[in-house]
Image 1 (cartoon, helix red, strand yellow):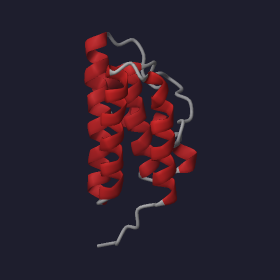
Image 2 (cartoon, helix red, strand yellow):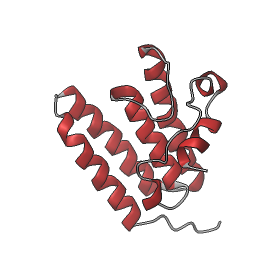
Image 3 (tube, rainbow, N blue to C red):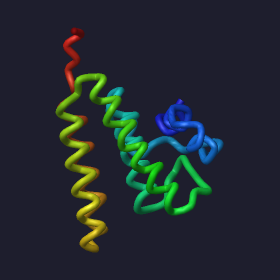
Image 4 (cartoon, one colour):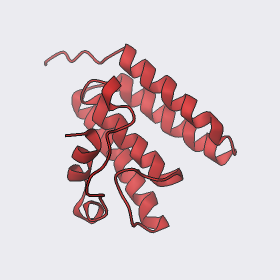
Length: 132
C-alpha cells in the first residue's frame, strides 16, 4: 500500500470522505524509511492542500483544505514524536516554516529545492531507534 493510500485511511472520517479512490505513490516515499516516508508524504500533502493541488484528496472548499492541511501536518509530526525522531521533527517544522515564508514572499520557485534538500537530509541520516 502506498503511503498516500495509508494516509487516507488514517485521517478523520470528515477528511476521509474527500479521499480519492486510488491515490498515486507518494513523491518521496521510495527514498525514506518508515515512519519517515509516511510522515513526509503527510506533511507534503498538507503543504499541497495549503498551496497547490493535493494528490490524495479532492472536493474540499478553501477553508476545509486549510484545516485538512493543518491536520496532516499535525498527524505527521505526532507520528514522529511517537517514534522519538526529534531530528526529523526539527527538519520538517523548519521546512513547513520555510515553505510558508517562500509562498508569502512570492518565492514559490524556491519550494521544490527546500523539499529536495530536506528529503535528502532525512534519507542520508536515518533515525536510529534505540528500542527503549
